[in-house]
Length: 404
Image: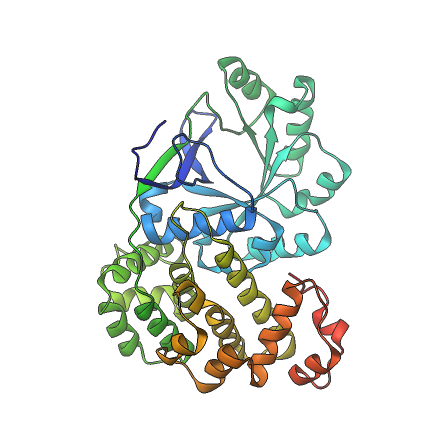
């Protein structure tokens, strides 16, 4: 499939069929701007983030998925991040990429996500290895890599998965013979070129004005009155439309209501924390080729890192965690805006501690940013820096499991 020159492909989907030949889901695929339907993937975390941003903001989940569910490729890093919170859990199947280590930390995270309503799939399975067999209790779907499996092994794989209560999806099914063999072997779901090629969704880039987004973020972080947030959203019509898309996608799994058309109802449904996450996606979007810019990748990981550090230090102080998140998010925004930090922060309505942390790395938040930057460079922060964050914390204990 070709697209017109100058248009921008934001996302693609490929149908997933059941045994009755009905489309029940779509896999969501990253696509950059291209003259064919190929993807340019060099960072799986950034690709997942880009797909979510476009699904919920630029296009809308109803346009892409309709009434079906969505399968999303995820790295272990993305599954562990807070960015996943913006997704409508009851409609999403999170695919664990074959590059992920099936360790206990990932198993525990899958338990948490399944408890929230997400389903988990194992991608590109070619046999039931001991590691995969041990991980089956934490997943719902096993996707078998059809072209790379001996045909006499497929029935065995399906039997093992069915005995564990898991569905089996045969992917890369490309011929009538493939489909007939997968049916006979007992597969439950099917995906591949025999049914459909990826369908591309296009859109034209309309850069967001950062001022309204930063204003909304500030209001959310200060837990402002809902009236003030509603007024801020109404003052930015293009943002309002995209926010209503997010709310309507969320309504599928939170409650059974008619289409949400008011900002106030959308705010009550989505919640302040989800609004903050969504604003982050809008503020740090994809670049002109539809791919996540390296700056975007860095800032999103930094924000997630500092939030997790503060969660360790102050596990019950959600406001402090949110303040750290916003501070990290703003720490490189001046680069995207083509100005210096002091000039940019002078026009942003945030508290003085955040402003000084971004401009001069001073104060408690400034030390937190300095620690994050040290980790990003592959270094190890000093005990003195850690002591400024948490006088009673040991450096190794604080940063254990938190490295980028």
